[in-house]
Amino acid sequence: MMKRKNSWLLGVLLISTSVFGQEFAYEASLLQVRDAGYYQVMLSPELLGQAKPNLSDVRIYDKAGVEQPYLLRREQEVSTKSLFRAYEITDKAYQQNAISHLIFSNSDKRAIDNVSIEVKNTDAKKRARLSGSDDLENWYVIRDNYLLHAMQSEEETTELKILNFPLSDYAYFKLEINDNWRLPINILKVGYYDTQQVKGATTTYDCPIIEQKDSLKTSYVRVVFDEPVYMEQLQLMASGADFYSRFTKVKTKRIGIDKKNKAYEYWTTLKSFELNSNSENKVSFSGVTVSELDIEIDNRDNAPLKVEQVKAGFLNKYVVLALKPENSYVIKLGNDHLATPDYDIAKFASQISADSPKLVHGALVDIRPKEEPKAPDFWDNKYLVWLVIAVVGFGLAYVSFKMIKEIGGKE
Image (cartoon, rainbow, N blue to C red):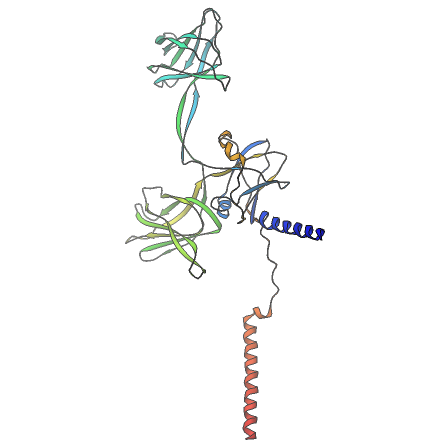
């Protein structure tokens, strides 16, 4: 009895595992890497189009079928980065028990009022002087009697010190350090921080225009994709007039459920904008998955424009995970039973470099079981069915007529 119970329990577990743990609809392989480390795998519009909006159904497995933890990242539309730009050091002389000096070039003669020096950690205190020159012969003092101190970091072996001074645009600057009765300090770099605004990387792709129909007042452009795709922006390129300004709507098809729990199709507007000859005609909206687009252009009393190209795009989305060169990996998705995974790695996202190498995954493959082709059924052929009905009807009519005739003869 116990043996039978155990067998039954094992069967239930196997069935539930296959149904709830492995029921994926799509997969995409990852390219093998040369070096072990963390990588950012860029997700394609096709993969994003088939996954759940929050990507809760995305899982990654190695060749042994072991689930791999990952975190999600998305490019920011605009981010601010501070880059250290080093000046060229043209001369450096360290002398024990003397005055050491370092000369760096400001070749484009930028007006600057500070520099940063990178120094090997030291607990020494030094006096310094900064001067400037345009010919490396005649030097003019800019600031005297700097006190250099607290040049040590608890986290790195080097420390950055900022030297402020009156705004100057000399071609060369000389930093002189008093090393009398002491060993010199080790200055590695001299430079400045340049703050830049960087646009996030995007994926763009062409949208297949199926047809354009022009009525008296409106042009209708239809876009149809082979499979659902993800997009956050759209750009139209049109021709036909030097100057134009047309009210335009972008619509997409959706599926709704009525009160009788029946599905029905309807169109909803993603964006309304002005198609203008002085604009890039690029519009943004919340991320959506679409299979079809309908673009309506109000021509009013103008000749129709010709929409030459439609491009879509989105800010790149990545899965970030550790990969090993001796292993292979696959992304799986399309399991409605899965909830958002809870991985430890999410708590350490800030410790994984945003500049990790980027990868692309392979083509998305449909792995759903294919239905066996059904053998032709006699009743599937409507013409044969109608023929049978006609023959049966004729037979019934004949029998009825014969019976009526016989009854009439008896009377």
